[in-house]
Image (cartoon, rainbow, N blue to C red; front, side, top):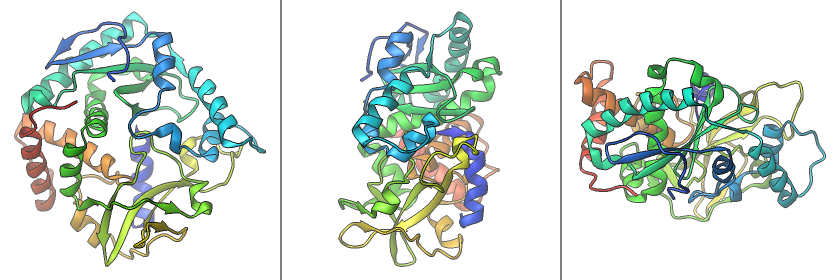
Length: 335
């Protein structure tokens, strides 16, 4: 998820320390990537479809209730999931001719940026779905599988303002479907596969908010002698009609993992951001998941590769961009 999430969590971070799935409508192609615009029927299938991350296997009842604006009591998870998928079906909107022109213009620039860095980074095909904003709110883009979901009001804005968002979301698609590239990218910021089957405390598990762009926590960071993972979770155990926005519920912490993979409900005591940013660098404050960190760095790599300008980065941040750029240039193929 990005855009409103980015602004909100930048503040929150400082407070806490802080298959191609279907053949949709045809659009322009370049840089060996076809961008497919889903009609309403295809869009419903795409928004309800699980992916490699297993979003629908992971999402919690509280999360679904908040998105659906549903008051308690809640049914069991299986019943709630059926209701949630039906709700999502009502969130898709048909693509208008002007929307396709907007997308053609946007992806003309996106594809050029990818091609300039490494044409082989482009997935064979991606899908685009236009959505209402009842579930995550205005300004929130997200991905599932090979699909980017775009809020309907965005199509009334200048397409050039959203090229960077598309780079960010495109990284999520690349990362999700190419584990080797993801692992090497995460290692640049200190995240390594922890290899444990996580056993999260029930009190925390029930209020986890599942980021569709970063569903799983298979990678951990070693900081101050602790192995930690980032988790976003709700401040409340149920939908509250007094809260108008999804992101008003959101809280974010790092939680330690023990040797048995157990995750308690007490956040890690980090104390200072210094050690954290020595690992992840300071290019972005959007640190809720390693994939969000690298998605921001991905668009920075493309921009700096095109402009040749690295002056906005710290010494460590510049080195990360250069190392990540080199990694991306060496990619031979993406699925």
